[in-house]
Length: 254
Image (cartoon, rainbow, N blue to C red; front, side, top):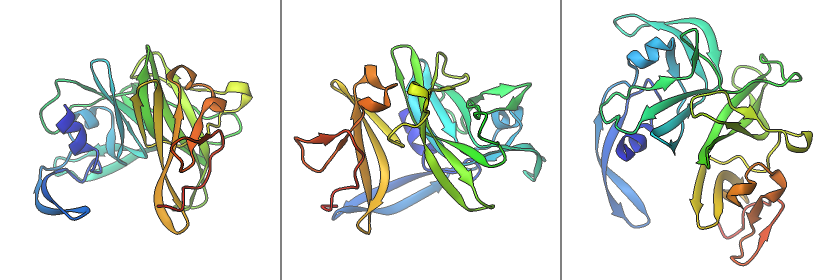
């Protein structure tokens, strides 16, 4: 299961997947072999009317893993894999993968309505769907609750996107609708994580960021029982003994 999750995480859905061998050299890695395993598209996508979709995040849940994907295009494919785009797209889709799903390509079980893929999120009344998208971030399962972070994206033309902010969705089932939490009447949360690690008494949330001309990572943390409270998050400031309740630009030591 871990191998399959790792392999899928680095590929677009229709571009296929490679297994790689590498050797460490200095501070990085040199790729010495790649093997194309073929397209990920299979009957599980066809049954949900999915043609293709952006890569996404995955996290462990009871019985397997939940996968969250970005822009997911609807329609069908001919026997020769020619796509037929029908029905537009959803900006987020989710699928469950059983823990014993070891064969390739993977047999996903998608969230659907009338056998057509749907988003686990709903837009608020002041968010016209033609002007916004909801892209998924990292997720985690905690004490019977399934949490999935997301970014609300404002669309300015075909390839001009602007992040409005990050929010958090919660569901009582893995493959269900995720309610966008609005504590104190606001859906915004202070971090847009692409990775969450639970260790000790904390959740550590990692967000890609850029500052001082360098790409790096913002690091936030929160107690598991406070994940639904935006005011409970604090951020690493560059000093091991200090954290701040305010998001700050990454340390200059990057």
